[in-house]
Length: 217
Image (cartoon, rainbow, N blue to C red; front, side):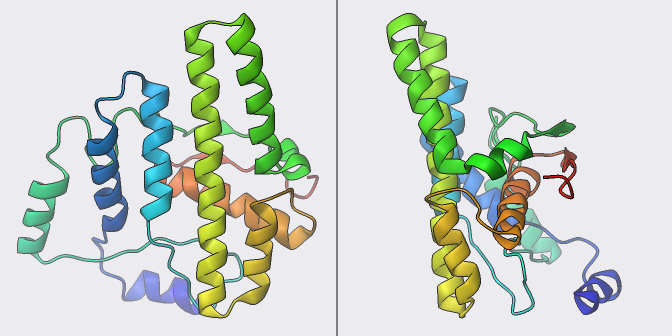
């Protein structure tokens, strides 16, 4: 880890793009731009995004979660900008993907229940609002379920990539997180990092997510 930090500070090109992120958001935006509401666009595009974004793994990774990075020549950057950064409503990421900076999640609940249980709660509220609520509430809960589904897909894909790479322990952790709550310090930290990584690397232009007190959680 120290060697990677030293490399990033000394040899990594100053201008480095998370170009894969931009390309996948671009494609996701075009697929959902005609959906009627922001929650629908957000959840459906996130599912497409987490189904298609690359999941690179490095031998030294203890917690899995990094993005593809690359540097461009001047001509390559010009072509990249023209193709992927010139779509109205999608400058790097879609405008309906609202900011997630300067916030904190209920990490204690996430660790206690896990993603699948939170999805089940959203199903409960969807059923409730279908009987007692309005279209906006119904739309929100359906979209929440879609976003949980997208995250579970990403957890399952991460397990597959870990297994291909030979990181069997990490693969088993992702398998468990895709169906339940973390059951060890290691699995809790992996869930911690995966959720943080998705929000900070892929959903936020201003990645200032407060991580709270893991020593207490």
